Image (spheres, rainbow, N blue to C red):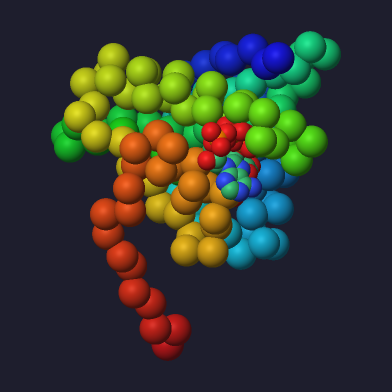
Length: 136
Ligand SMILES: CC(C)(COP(=O)(O)OP(=O)(O)OC[C@H]1O[C@@H](n2cnc3c(N)ncnc32)[C@H](O)[C@@H]1OP(=O)(O)O)[C@@H](O)C(=O)NCCC(=O)NCCS
């Protein structure tokens, strides 16, 4: 059983180290691009276990000019996957985005990332745009 928390900023969040570690794993796996798309001011929803260890986190913000929620990164510790932790965090992010006035919630997902694509379908998030790339 996990407990869900929210910090208004990534800077000095309890989830900071977890996020940087998991982001590195995603970079190695090729499921995150080599761009820093979040910042100190990005909000964080995270999950802790019974020992108060961070076991999952989602980075997000709401662009008020577009009324759009955006998820920059989300991960669950390997030993805690497929137990509903991401789903719990996602529900909190979605309700927080609604409360801040967002009328949509989006993120970029690598085409090879089946677990995340399946998770997003489970939350009624269908792929809407296709990004094409030619390396120059
Ligand atoms: C994607 C990820 C966050 C899912 O976290 P999770 O806590 O295991 O997800 P949940 O247990 O809440 O599962 C939610 C849904 O996701 C789908 N899902 C999760 N893992 C899956 C897998 N390995 N294969 C297929 N579908 C999967 C299922 O549809 C599941 O719904 P169900 O339980 O009703 O079947 C996790 O696999 C992860 O941390 N991956 C590495 C980080 C990453 O790639 N992040 C995306 C880049 S930003």
